Image (cartoon, rainbow, N blue to C red; front, side, top):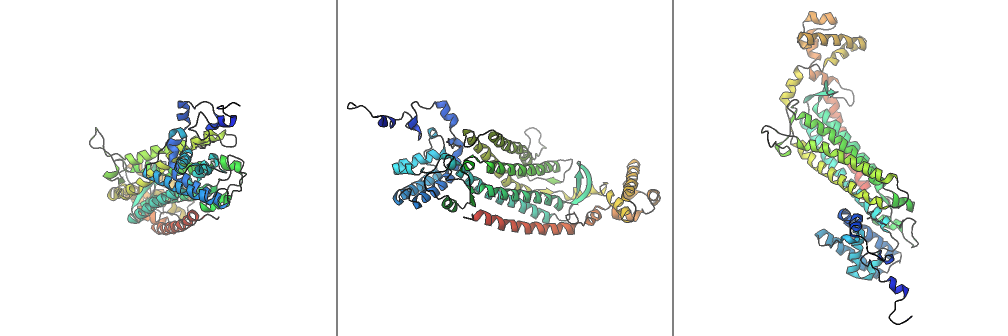
Length: 490
Ligand code: ARG
């Protein structure tokens, strides 16, 4: 070989794509449009802290196992801490051409500490790295959502206490059905949100699995200590299969699924708030701070917040379906498609968080229109089931009692009267057991509500018991969540 000529090895060290961590194999540069298309940095930069957390644990393990020296390890750990600070203070030089947050952090580390920075990726692939970051992120999000849900529940309990005794019409088919305590109605949402919290807690267990050590797909030839990494990061368990570890996004789907059910609950509640604050219902008035006016009609006070909560539910469902669909045709193991897990996840996290932060003050400042509610119930027919129940309790077969009261209702409607206004002889024509005194007692909404004493019913006694169970369950949940969130079993 003549002087000045390069050996094949040297030639390989002069990659055209020298800006890329993987540039060695390539002769031509990546097309600009392809580069922009492939980059996840614009959205995965939000995984920066998780990436550093994960890399820190990985580095400690490499040191512990003697895979890198203590000295190199310390350099890397200090470099990572500095990078963490740069990201926090907004001075980190993000570079889109490095595709994602993982390669940005690594490149910065090498810039800071030199070639030793290149040892951090020993025994690791971006495939298990990105999975780890996502696990850390979803775990953190679940703890946040759990706390925010507790805030909404707390306001529901406060309102249930504040308005204890106020009766509202209860509906089926959006037709007045039977009167209920307003507190009872609110507590229905308490229990929905409680189930949501439990669902998220359950999903936490699958987010609490540690994938690192899977490498690209098949594990590693380095003597890694995966349990140590799991301990460092407080994971409850590790993936038993390296291929599963890098392919699994169930935990993302589960999170999005829990969020979709939660959004459905909040959307139903929102729909009720929209109805309740209409002039037709006028049960409640939302505070000025949470309503908006019309640019044209000066009288308007629009319930925009609950409307938009209802509207945002669509995108939260969409995010779930997007990730499910993205995954459904993927062969094992990692495929670039999986980069599409992040935007739906982040969007759902942001949306849910926004909604859950706005709900407590919106509910706490809402005014209940008690006078209007009292008037509304005075002349409605929503207590006549009590009459049928009364006859049934006296031994009349319920089916027959139902028919008697049905005829009585039809008669009263035709006469333009309320059943309590019927005369004794009018009543007796329907059934000998009926009289005026009985009517005004039994048809009184307060009496109707008070008589529904079955467990879980709307009678004040039953609702009081329900309230105290709700408080107890919240306390128990908090203890359970704290145990789960704080300590992995490793
Ligand atoms: N940016 C990628 C993602 O978010 C990181 C993992 C890429 N791994 C790979 N071999 N291309 O999914």
